[in-house]
Amino acid sequence: MTNADKKNKLNPIEKSKAEKEPLQLRQELDHFAQIGWEAMDEFDRNFGLKWLGFFYRTVTPGKFMLRMRMPNGVLTSHQMRVLADIVQRYGKAAGFQDQGNADITTRQNIQLRGIRIEDIAEIIDRLGKAGMTSVQSGMDNVRNITGDALAGLDADELIDTRGLVFNVQDMITNNGEGNPALSNLPRKFNIAITGGRDNSVHAEINDLAFIPAYKDGYLGFNVIVGGFFSAKRVAAAIPMNVWVPPEDVVALSKAILEVFSDHGYRGNRQKTRLMYLIEEWGLEKFRDMVEKQLGYSLQEAAPKDEIDWEKRDHIGIHKQKQPGLNYVGLHIPIGRLYAPEMFELARMADVYGSGELRFTVEQNLIIPNIPDSRLNAFLAEPLLQERFSINPDPLERALVSCTGAEFCGFAIIETKNRALAMIKELEKELSLPRPVRIHWTGCPNSCGQPQVADIGLMGTKARKDGEMVEAVDVWMGGKVGKDAHLGSMVMEKIPCDDLKPLLRELLMEHFGASPRQQAVAAAV
Ligand code: SRM
Ligand code: SF4
Image (cartoon, rainbow, N blue to C red; front, side):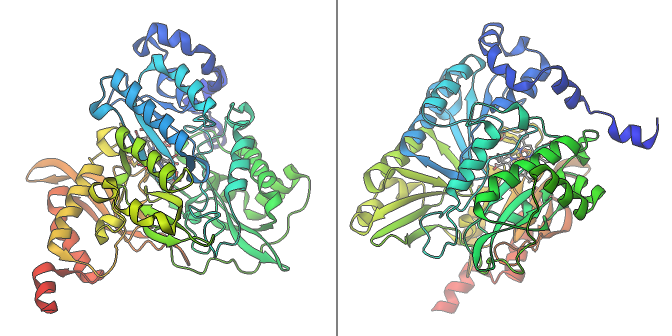
């Protein structure tokens, strides 16, 4: 077999996709409900159902995870209630702990746990009636499309990204019905559209991102391409040397996806992300091919973009551009929500705001449109006092964690609970002048984005006292917002049991932390 033959050899996922288009599984849900998850064809169960948004979990066999699509992270209180009811009702039916739970994700999205195969058809129906979809949220599809969490609220925003994000999602998913034409990509694909000044979406880690930029006095977007993280390699997106007006965002996204679909590699799945195609062709050929697909020439990039702010975390009370209205960012520790809290959040959005809620890529939640006159009553709500602070301690405030071993079969270590417990201990011991962004990720797939963090912790194994134990590789130097760039690995294989003293040291040496007693003494 020649090298070219090897490269073009289809991987097993491609072979299975060629045999049966996975979106068709929607028609077989009643059959699956009858035969049960154990009797299902392995590809259909473990991979195929991800095209509908349902993820088989080897850690909790028979209890699927539902990954939604939440374009721009925006949802209504009604939608939140539907999601809460799904985790409560179906999670309970599955015998799931705490009547089901959900996680806000690093793509401004939400995942619900504990779904049984026999409930999937009904759930899809309920989501559709509530104007939501989970279609094409996993495997070789475009993931949730991120936009500015403050779109339409921020007085300094340049472009409101909501309409664009929704339109791109509708194009990709055929208005949520499923779109076979764009659901057979060579690999996953991430899209972000940012219209604010602080790059709130981490544009640089997406396969395709739109960044606000003026061209000849007209506001549109510079385009960057090819960013991705994987176990084998991470790469920041590179400029495509293209500027588009907002009205061309949908068409350009479609053309790039079609080029990727038609020409991307379908061999070794570690080498099938968009960047590999761009590198093989060179940027010029990539651009030419996209123009050919579009049927018209693209304009060259604007000389500079408008990202000139440090990134905001949205936590706390903030004035909106609408006079007299505020958005309040609630800190959701490690993104975890339980059904009763989801119902409460929906109620609070109705009672104090306009019935709208938003998710952020930091796994937190915003309730917008709260009038000045309602703020005090809102702030007195028990949920804010007991669970979701608007003024969390600096380490907790900026903590992000992927799912980890609790639910994810790829995980090498436990993340969420460990991360939270360790941060709480460090908060007790140290005083910090500002938040430090610590991101945990349970394996090198990097869902928790350790490369964008001040301190990134990536699950691995290490030998300690002759035994294999849970450990982390330590990343540092990730910069977000203006001049964003990825961090790099600075230490390897630190056993989790030895991690706290190391973090303590790093926080004191690099981030101005001081021991609490000392801080108190200095203040006296
Ligand atoms: Fe991820 C696979 C969770 C964001 C890179 N990711 C998975 C799976 C589906 C693996 C599995 O089937 O168990 C995880 C599901 C675990 C579970 O039960 O929750 C999973 N990824 C997540 C989430 C939930 C982490 C979180 O706690 O927030 C995020 C869901 C986003 C969403 O709403 O769609 C999530 N994943 C990311 C990101 C971050 C981002 O997009 O900004 C990345 C790195 C960026 C990227 O993709 O370029 C990421 N996930 C991966 C990869 C490595 C991709 C690659 O090219 O190799 C995998 C493994 C794969 O695709 O083979 C993966
Ligand atoms: Fe699972 Fe690894 Fe992603 Fe964490 S980084 S959610 S452990 S695949």
